[in-house]
View 1: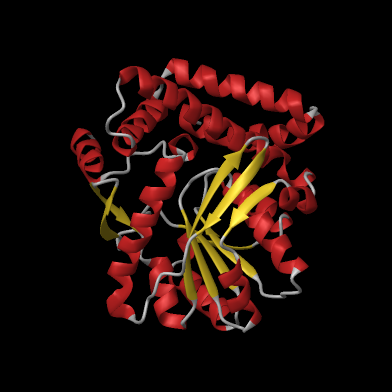
View 2: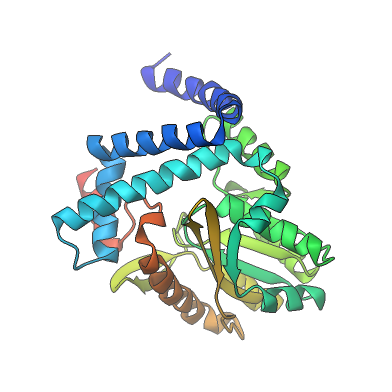
Length: 306
C-alpha cells in the first residue's frame, strides 16, 4: 500500500474519533483547543493558509502585510471553530441554535413556503453553514411548515468518510444529494422545489465545468449557475444567504430575492449573487473559509505550475 493510500485509510478513523472525543469535552475546553489549533496552523503557514491569505488579499485589497497577518489568524480561528462545531453540532439542541442565532430577512422565504412555492438559498463557504441549516429546519418546523430541506455535498474520500458526513448532515434534518450524481441530483432538486421545498446550496465555488464568469471583489471568478438555473426552471424564490459567527452564537443574513424570470436571466442572477457575496463577505472576511485557489488568475497560475 502506498503512503497516500495508507493516509486515506486513516482519515475516516481519525474523524470518527474526533466526533466521539470532541463531544465528550466541555464546550469551553473544546473551543480553546480548536482555537489554538487554528493559531498554530496560521503560524505554520502551509499551502491552505497561504491560499487563504491570497484570497483575503483580494477581499481586502488595501490591507498591508501586518493587517493581512491578523486577518489570516482570525480566519484560521474561524475555520477551526467551524470544525469544532461540526464535531459537536449533533449534540447541540436545535432550540439552542435558534435562540443563539441573530437573523434578518427570513420572512419572504417563509411566506413563499407557506404558499407552496419552492425556495433556493445560495450561500458562500462562510461561518457555519451546517448550523445555518439546523436553524432553517427548526424555524420552518416552528412555523408549521412541512417543506423539506435539501442540499448537495461534494463526495469526499475515502468513501467511509463521505458516508459519515452524509449521516451527520442527515442527523441534522437535511436531505443530502451527492454532487457526483450529476443529472440525477438536478432532477431531484427540481422535484423538491416544484413540491414547495427548500434547497440550500453552497454557491461560491464552481466544482464543475459549467461555471458562470462573474466579478467578485472586483476580480474575475467563476460561480456555479445551479441556484439561478433551478429558480428559472421551477419558479422558486432565489435568495442570497450569508452565515457568520456572532460572539458565541451565529449570524444569518438573508438578502432580498433575486429575480430569475427565465433561463436567459441565469448569468445575470449569478452575477447578482456574486455582488451580494462581495458585500456580505467583506463585512466579516475572517469567516470566509476559502482555502483553495479561487480567483481565475490564481487558478491559471496553479494549472500552469502543475
